[in-house]
Image (cartoon, rainbow, N blue to C red; front, side):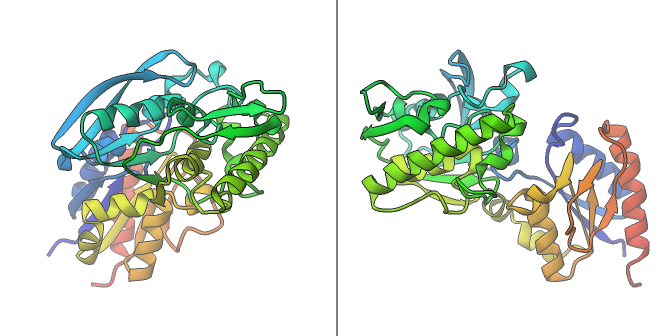
Length: 357
């Protein structure tokens, strides 16, 4: 009887879409004389709607404010007439910008708030918000402003951008969307502190000095909101997701946060598939320490290790101290689909050869 290999595919940022990874792994597994079960998944960031496509009843198209305050087009997926899911990155993501346009001091999350409101207008009463891949670092400031929240300094001047948050003095409540909001966090980092959202600022285009400016602003916002709400949200896991939009969902709308990878894997039936698998395959463009903080690949490897199923980690770059004992397939910087297929086929065949008869 042939072995069964469970592969959990996601996009390799900068090189391959999830569908390309899925196709390459299906071929690699079958060419290694095994049966393939391939799940296209997401941790709440890139590819969330793609991963959920088979469970959606419809997808609606919307126009909202993008990260540079220009209109962009974004989608809303629907599980039912009252249950919707969005990807925040489609309204404020890095994928919407050229490299030279990245600026976490000024980019806005306003479009996320607008997308939520438009879903509410169409009847949504429950909205799942994928958090990941954002170009922003405004803690949901723009999102909250779209709901009527006001932010000002001690002289009454409007505070409208991330770089202005450190002089924030007063906050005027708006009107939250009035629906159940659940943030699907791609990472478990809190908002502030050395392991907070500041870790991801460089990939959004921020310098070391700008990291310090943003951190001071986040601390100031968190302090004022703690006084208003009677609770400090800044150290809750996931509040640093999507440049602090996780914090914004909780502080400005009473939302809750969950692990995006846990939620997606449960929705896709991962546990049932894992129970029948002889080998697990997972990967991403770069597997580093941040992959261990709630991201999909780290989560899959952890679960496989806990259940005693051997795993293969496929990634051009591996820079994490812990890979949960997985067989590692790596080398190079960026692969195309054929390179991924070739390396994966060899790695999977080798891993299968090590299994007990």
